Amino acid sequence: MEGVDIGALITQILGFLSSGSSLNYTPGTPA
Image (tube, helix red, strand yellow):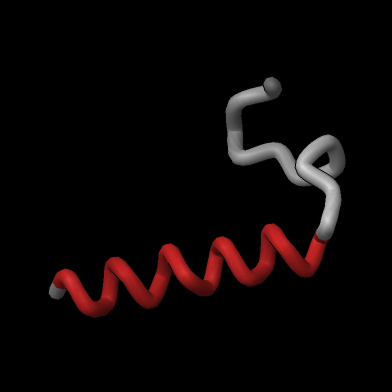
């Protein structure tokens, strides 16, 4: 199960880096 969680986190991180802008990407909590 942990492997799936890690894979999901990696996918989210890759998507976040691909977006390249944390200002446009809001993970539910506005910074």
